[in-house]
Figure 1 (cartoon, rainbow, N blue to C red):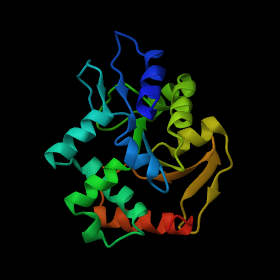
Figure 2: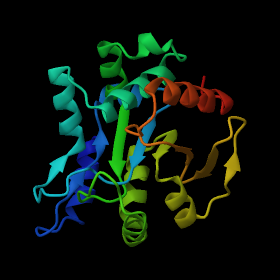
Figure 3: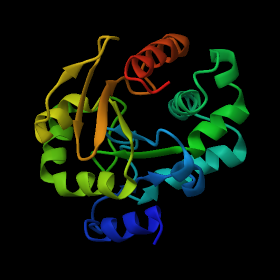
Figure 4: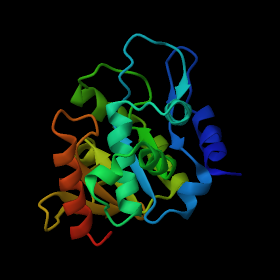
Length: 212
């Protein structure tokens, strides 16, 4: 059974017909399983406050790949993923549409909270959801088996729940080890700052941790 099928089986045990459920997963299994390092982008929740329909991040991102039209979130995520797989090419190379696509295909992603929220998340709500559904998101990680989990605004929640030792890398950011992987504190890919600055800092972090 492939990764996304295993995740579907897991999700079926948690879905409630009265509550929206947004699935995570790997964007392209063949690309993900052969990538090094394998990266999971762990976010808070999707910005979808009004919809009650279930949907899939994998389908959502693949639709953007098919249309070659990317939102800022997935444009940045694709650049970061491509960069790690390609020894951090220059920013202008990483931002080429074909390379964003390649980066996204190598990526896995999910949210701590599976129902939609607003553009600005409620920290306490996300944290409580992560506590209540710890078995769900830790099982996702077990199935996806990433080498690295990039925590897009979720690191403090995850670290507090899992209680792993918080370390500081030479680039000045927090990281720690748990569940057979490395969790790294970073910004959400839609964070309102220059994408060039995010790219440069992401590069410094990953280099300081030996991923280049």
